[in-house]
Image 1 (cartoon, rainbow, N blue to C red):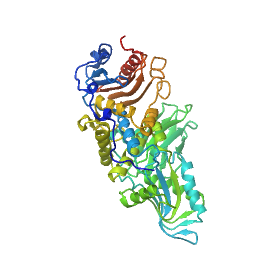
Image 2: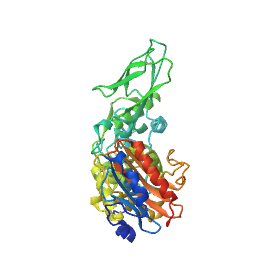
Image 3: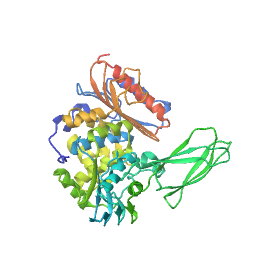
Length: 496
């Protein structure tokens, strides 16, 4: 693993402000007559649109519409996170999860705590298969008793579990799962309710299987409409399900966000240990306060790998490389992955795994490497969930132009991370001229939509485009307008 310098030499085109990127407030460009009507009219009287289309082949602006206004970019903010991560951390960056004992082992007893230490791997523990080798390593070390606690250590990124500007309404939703340095199964528990005979309690299953949550089943199988309510009381580990379920229906499913991911991970590990005959005398606890000492020790080990990152190491797992991880992150628009990558940039460069440190690092990258003026963006988090995030279409186009000419270890993974119409893009624009020729990142919030990416035209030109709309009534209508622009760009030939 290697950490990039804070800034490096840049292509002049990425830093300079060519005429093609000069500020324009009125609709302009050769495609203005075709595109502008898609953004105007009675249907959009409350909406705010912004767009910019630049020919990377010729360097001129094809279309501009409020290109310098700042909008909520939704998940298009992930493009900033991705680019900064590839620049600073590199495509070979890997997350580590380490299990170690912090005391001596004598007579098959660990006289100390068993510590599961995470650095923000979003792929860790998608099921207990990942945790099983950690439990096995304890048995293989000849330990049958842990005299201390099982500790879930998330100190690498600190205790922040919600981003600045996140809506309280989102915090119980899976897409806003808390980005802890140590988590399993994406910090979400899946619950399924299967009906029984009329008048009986249904069967409830939990995935991953865990006794961390006590489930109170107050649901009845009844000949009435299925209505089930999930309640979480003051005791976070108790979940109550109330209501009724129709006898002849399939499973009713819901998800529960894990509010204390590090403790949950430790609890799952403890279950696996006890299933293997290992006795834990102490408690199941979590550590979340920032620990720069442990973070520095792990970083030093990454620079010069030795026998083990910590004394008493029993097991270590590395994630796949960042280059592959961001492809999954962008295709799925995974907020948890984006926030963990975002804060890891802050830890690596700013010395802290906080949202503020990540925001400072990404903003610095955009200003010094890409040439985006700080006034064009406002970075609050890595995923675009924050109501404080803002970006202009011109800022996003500058980023695409930078990546188009970046070094191969940045450009290639960035390019391949973007879904292509017909492959990872759902049904949007399938069967049109954009099929197979347009790759882009979508963005969707309650009242915002965005589409930013590249398209190859019928004329053979490569265009970079960014479309953002805020204050909309219909996401579907906005996406339809975006798709119309994408199809038009794909069909375009200069001079026609």
